[in-house]
Image (cartoon, rainbow, N blue to C red; front, side, top):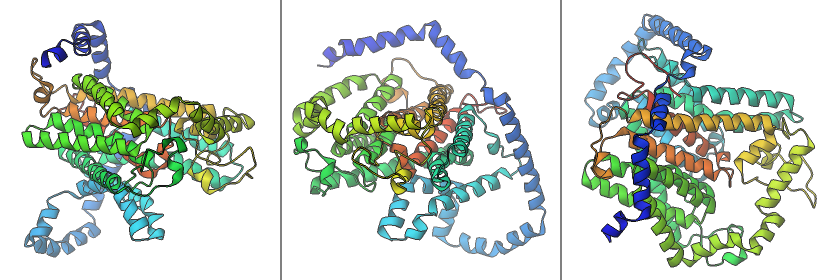
Length: 533
């Protein structure tokens, strides 16, 4: 069996392609591109960041010599002496405060759920995200005031493209705001949580910080996956609208704390490649085995979400991960998919339903086809270039502020396509600049993967599970693959309508950029800052 697999076309073709690429001009061109300095490193934006960094250092020096700082230092001596004699407090204090903050960010969804649904603290739940962002800003500024800490000057093309999109969104909001309050809410929903990219990138200091954020997020989603499996076992009750009449074999769809199987599936898509990366990265056999079962649990749970969009996103994530790490996974994925389709009729029926006339009719009456057509009609009613208006149709803000009268031919609903929702609200101008952000993200991710692995020597001929032990490239690949899978899922759902999904996405994108360009050992981290994208 092993010999048959090794000699199969699925195994030999990728190996032949890889061998040809290693000696190709394409490889040399790509490596030169990845090693080139980021255009943002020589831009006015970078110069502004450096001036702000110098200003922060001046403020830091002034603060350290001030009377207020001396009083605070003196008042903290007694608590410090007490902390040294407390085992628990001393252990907590061994972890820097900013690292606790990073792990707190990884618990974004559980905290949101606890405040809103468990404790019922509606007032706090409505503002805690803004308070967390404000705390992050203060922490970034405080750390930037330390002389020698130049984390604030980490300018790059991805960050610049996000800022450009924010500026374009603000301009469109000012040009097209028949209802100013709704437009402002729509703009906030579109860009607020992108701020996490700026914050996380500047809070990460070393690989211990990166490991804390990476591990805390992966463990959070793994625990949620176990909860999802439990929901499937007990057959948690779900709304009848989550399955059609032709899919009655689907007895339940799991959603854990998210309240939506589609969003939960996307969250697993984000984390599953990160868990898989640990299987290759860890040296100890016990951790490799633990990672293997963790990946199995996540994949099993995503099946129980019965989210077709999430399945497509996972396929994209697995393909990317396999191409970078271990091409045998392509054969494994193909075999697993065939086995699932044969052994699990409920999954097979849910997939085959897409190709039936019943699905076409349902989609045209109240499904995605109707929603997308209504969105296109509204776009053309106003101006296709500047859109129907932020917050006016296709997302959560519009659903909460239904300003137009519903008729037999018009109803409010989610667009179930984040790109189309952006097009309807922001027009072609907004969509173009949003796609620019996505394009820069994809290029930046591939460059980060290349750079994060340049300081690691790989012995040829070794198995992928052995030769990648300790290679930080694996962690970067895991993040990039998962985020690319989420972007794919956005074609079928408004994934970024959930604040924690957008926060997680851009926070992990910052972690990816840090591993590729700023962590010790990456090709861009030695010496003076050489730029990153």
